[in-house]
Length: 233
Ligand code: ADE
Image 1: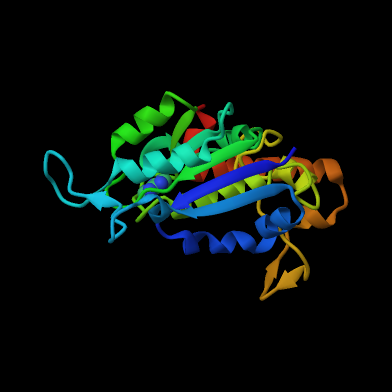
Image 2 (image 1 turned 90 degrees about the vertical axis):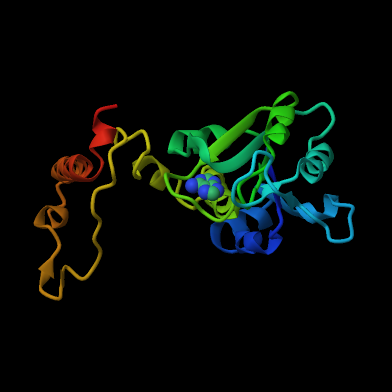
């Protein structure tokens, strides 16, 4: 089963990089099918307007509901319920767990907003038809949802069976189950001495139990230092 992604944006070129690297390869192998849509194709005025001033006043512009409504009418298939993902700084935090959940789905639609956001009725109305998840990458503000859609797509697509050359690399990395949600331990490659810096001796020992214990210690120490919030969960 392959994954279908529809991404709606007023800057479709922003998503061009999806043709590169691992995601591009997954597209060419038929593991994921990605369509990027210009929101303005669902406008009808001469200026192809997608925004207007906010009711209640305030700075900035709000995305008008009509083009979004038509876009979702066109992209939500009859009798199916794709998940609608709306990147926004006021969404739920994006996590590896959410990436894993989304990788189980067969159809995701991304609504990339710009300006001060999309008229809230679009999300309320969509939620009467399909599951809607508003997702935030973190506690900072981007100019729009496109970069977030790229991040979420990359995190999800690499979890699809057949996308990674070596599926074992999924098991050991940061935030995955095997290392108990610790940050990843530091890694080294040849040469064993570089600019006066040595690779930790244990890694050259060939003793797999010792190496595993050292890596776990390192992961724990890093997590304690950088992300103590992960240990108190
Ligand atoms: N759009 C603007 N800022 C964002 C953020 N932090 N996460 C997701 N989408 C966004």
